[in-house]
Length: 233
Image (cartoon, rainbow, N blue to C red):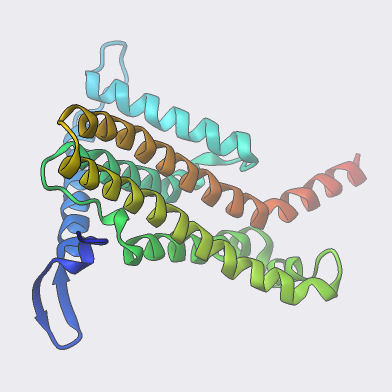
């Protein structure tokens, strides 16, 4: 039994390896790009719109509302990153309905790459909003003594993001594989349905946590603006 799609290798030359994780990851990205082009090439502003545009607008509106509810006042600025995270993870997970498909999110290398993206996005948005000095000062709050603990927190939460997603997807795949070998067909079908639900929930959780981390990084800038407005009034 394979624990990860990384174990299926198609080509290897020295340090360069093309495995199942890389192939499925690029295939999913290609599908998302093609779908985005096809759906957005004929967008309309009238009352009558296509079914796909309706679904797209509902998805964008829902993601924007979630981002705003968490505390980011300009969701359109962050939806490009957070929405892409969600769409990639949810697509990678729901494709388990296809036979012989192994989700790239069942590989620690993929989930680590996604977590590192969040790790880099947090200071990017934080510095953009508060400036380099303002963002670095946030590591000294509430007291300078907290500096090493805040730095450790940055690293550990990134690790937690990667391991949580990897663990849930990998364990779901293993359970389905075990049931396929020891039980009638009805149980694996039920587990596939449960896997679809779990995959969507994991995509939602990962995206929400990424939004929370970004919101925490830019919150100081919002608080300073509020104080300035209050002082002027």
